[in-house]
Image 1 (spheres, rainbow, N blue to C red):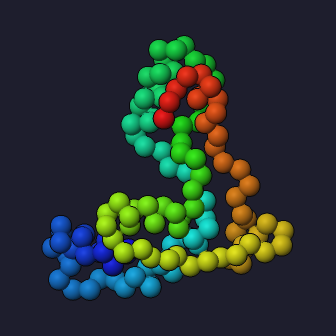
Image 2: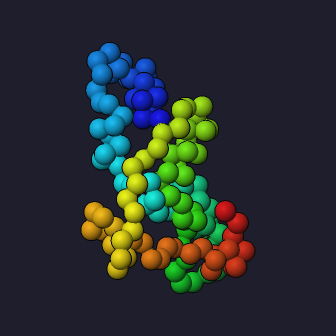
Length: 122
């Protein structure tokens, strides 16, 4: 996946004449495959803001995707772009909610049910 990405960037920018990075060295810098993240698209932020104003909503409403793992994100991007898949490194959870790298494992995420129950559709 990273090799194809670097190739595409090189083709678009002209920087691809010399190898600038190797996929294994870049994957070492990425979070583990099991790392959870939530994404927010600018169109969702704009749409939710306008919806909240028109509906007269007050309070705090979260606007983000449902949690997904880094590996799922990379798999989705590769599939949509027609790139070869790439496996990210694993970092298994140990006792006490700590990963081998010492980072706390995520226990919560931003839920959007409040905004959805008000009538907004992502």
